[in-house]
Length: 110
Image (cartoon, rainbow, N blue to C red; front, side, top):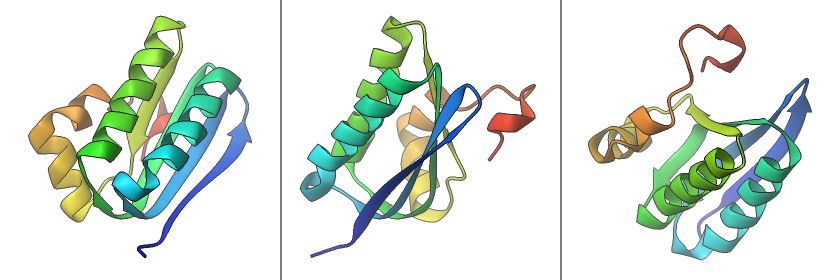
């Protein structure tokens, strides 16, 4: 079974969710649970995807759903540190642009 890990940490005014391994259908429930809790817990959620080796459509769906929940609550969710195949998936689908943090806030930079 592929490895997946989602760790959370807090910083003033935000929660950082660090993802690693492979994010796919088998990890959908864990991803949804972690991101939902993070969105409820802070006005800004930064999802560090730098440790992901693989991201499929269910992982994309989880990120977009969490983003929509955050926006509906007046909160924000951003993805940072994408590289390799994960960056390609985010870019080709437009999700990378959707979840890109504002350039004028260095605390959110990846």
